[in-house]
Length: 185
Image (cartoon, rainbow, N blue to C red; front, top):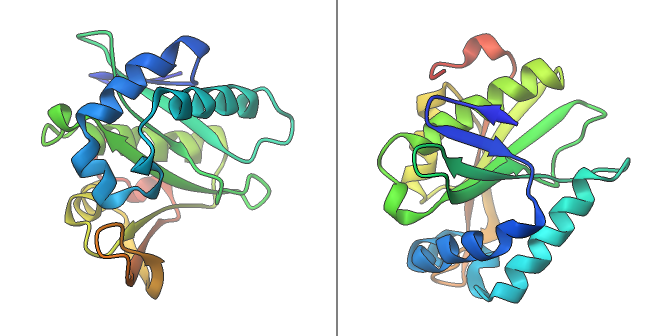
């Protein structure tokens, strides 16, 4: 578990499905704009995600590091994050993904959790590289990366499909190579 001033960032447990699904459904318009997985906001899909996440953390061949975001003051699940399946512990390289319940955005929580996950990757896993990949048009996600001290390493042209238009669009790769580059802690 990672603890920040306002958040607990922890491994998923089986009881997380309903509160996580509630957060997804409260934030559906925003999530469907940027997250391809948000096309199916059913409780069954969230239950499968949680079951798979619990299995990942229990595996000796872990390829994904999903985490639940809990707002400490309310003891409420407000999103999910972690190191996604692009990560490679052998390098060691970790890619951070994140989303928050819309009612909790604009409060610096995404920056707080991203900074904590970045620091954790460098200190716990001795990361050689931490990165964030975001669609170029996703200004809020770009600003989180920049506030933490990540720098744009590459623009991948026509690398993903825009969830709104269904057309190819660009991704930006933000990278950090040393915990001392981290601005927000």
